Image (cartoon, rainbow, N blue to C red):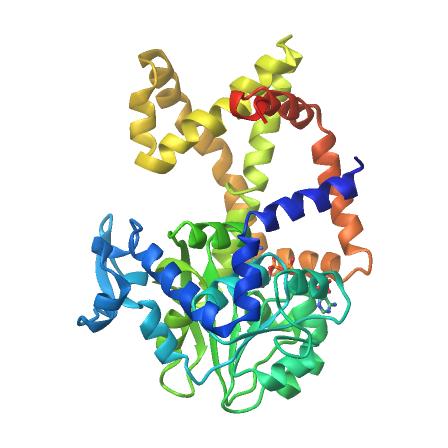
Amino acid sequence: MNANTARQALRSVARASGASTERTLLARAPAAQRAMSTLLANRSSCSKHAAAAVPAASAAKQQLRGYRMLKFADTEEKVYERSDWPVERLQQYFKDDTFCVLGYGSQGYAQSLNMRDQGMNVIVGVRKDGASWKEAQEDGFVPGETLFPVEEAIERGTIIMNLLSDAAQASTWPTISKLIKPGKTLYFSHGFSVVFKEDTNIVPPKDVDVILCAPKGSGRTVRSLFKEGKGINSSVAVFQDVTGKALEKAVATGIAVGSGYIYETTFEKEVYSDLYGERGCLMGGIQGMFKAQYDVLRANGHSPSEAFNETCEEALMSLFPLVGEHGMDYMYKACSTTARRGALDWAPEFEKACKPVFERLYASVKDGSETRRALEFGNRPTYRQDYDKETDAIADQEMWRVGHTVRALRPDRQSR
Ligand SMILES: NC(=O)c1ccc[n+]([C@@H]2O[C@H](COP(=O)([O-])OP(=O)(O)OC[C@H]3O[C@@H](n4cnc5c(N)ncnc54)[C@H](OP(=O)(O)O)[C@@H]3O)[C@@H](O)[C@H]2O)c1
């Protein structure tokens, strides 16, 4: 299997993990759509995130909170929760709206399906006969009914959700901007386009609400968590409030796309923190740190198996999940006293070594360098192939080739 075929196969598996029967049903029959949305709403109400597991129907009758003030360590912040927006309330709130989802990448796919499953009126706008057009069709969006070329979709929508790639948002803006008429709402999942307007030339029309909901995770997770009755954490922000309702609309849309809890931010803070985070601990930092540790082990004569297990596998399969569930202190306490002593001593060393890199990274985000690089790259006609070359090079590193073998040895995979 070559790299392209493998990527396509992976994508199909990821997509297939969304319930295809649900999708087909929902796309074709409005009655089934309502029934499924009620089912999903009730399933959601059983989740940990749906406060007190209140069934959606009875929750709708209750006095809804709107938001909650919570202390995050010593700082009080406002949070919005799914339990305040039962599906009936969402349906009522958006009964006159058509969500026009532009783009069917990771976020377009997840956000549109999550909304459709909850009975929202959703249409998708993508390039006719591009990869996304075909994918949206596979997921039950019907050309001429719920699937349109970008411009026609905008004309039909009331809430225009710009989920094209960030580079495409900039290159298509001259065409798109003319169609964002008064009465419509412009929605993003990233502050990128609007904040770095010197580079993107995206200046929203003055007479529309401009809102943001940024899920803090990949679209694949936005979808899978929703289907499990859980929800992704997201931030919301308002760039322009013409109607006086922009924040409420942003929160409601955030819940509709599958968020569990939502915190407030600004467009600027969202884009700075997001670009910084993904270049740091979330992606770039983790690859860099894993690779450095692995290479030193290998240079000191450790076997690939040992180097991978002591660097990646134990982290990902044993220790990081403990941190995710219970916090770093819990993970430390769950390890030997020998491990704890060493980790406690070396953590400040790593902090000291990394801090200047993080400071340089934040400055590079803030001055727009990271944006210009992303736009330059994303606007190349060969951007997909160019990105693939670099990620294929990561896949070819010894460490990740070893990872294939180690993962295949997991007992749950051997039985397949
Ligand atoms: N992915 C994430 O984890 C994540 C998380 C939070 C927020 N966001 C934000 O969500 C937004 C969407 O990101 P994404 O990752 O879902 O999408 P993406 O993979 O970056 O973009 C994919 C979409 O853009 C379309 N596209 C690319 N170039 C185009 C062009 N020149 N003209 C028209 N369409 C074009 C593609 O259509 P074709 O198939 O036709 O090429 C596809 O539908 C971005 O603002 C991103 O920053 C992403």
